[in-house]
Image (cartoon, rainbow, N blue to C red; front, side):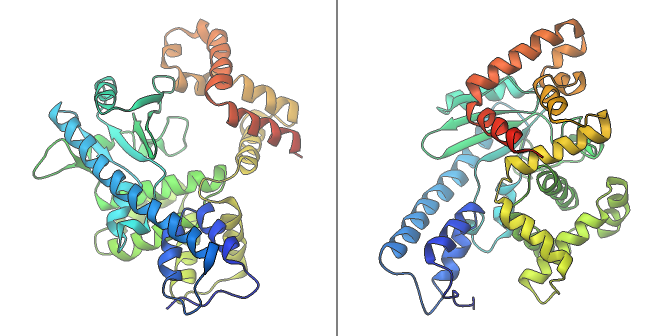
Length: 354
């Protein structure tokens, strides 16, 4: 049974924190088991959010099936990613909330998937402008990201996922619906988790995911392979930290002072991290790799990114390097019109940088 809510914490604060970390459905079912439950407006707030989550859960799961079915009809290999798979590991699919649906699309088939998404009444929110993924929306609740690759070539451990299509397994009833081995799924979970943790912070939902991965997949993962490859990824300490933290929070592990520091960082960063932490990570990375040590230098590099990263956004640069200045301008103009809120957030964070 969950512990009762402390008197010095309001129901509204608890609700806001759960939403901030996208674990409000887990919190809701726990609240329902308490002796002292929210009342009045507080109860209404929890119930409205719960009813909304129920609708979104059904829509997302049904839409995922539909998208995979349509891809299969066109003989396009498609791999469901992240939350879509994690939902199957939770006791109830409602417990694992998702902001969007993520799929990895067979190489060379992304344009055909664009036609499918439009056929399914999705509007293109950010398509063909990035080399990593295309984003589609269907109001009021559905967002889909179709990925070209699992990790960009600028990521340190992209080598492990570059050949993922050679290791995917096919559904016995439908060869176009793919799945990772549970070992690859676990490793990609670590890669994705660490990326968010380092670049901007990650919420408590990632720790819950990790706990269910350990609990439900313990006999399905090749742990000898994992122990062999983690040093090559430089993830030994990270995996130990999040594993110890998961057991400390959800079983009888010890919550050491060091783990408390990590937990505090996770709790303050929320489900998607903060812009301040992302900028801190980027600034430190530029210091190490490019010798940029001033705010002005960091700002200039963010405005005019190095060619390697620009080639990832604009693959045509690999053959036509002389276009770099024009793509710099295109990226800045696109950001103003397509990502205005992010630009404002970055400028605000830049002003507050130390």
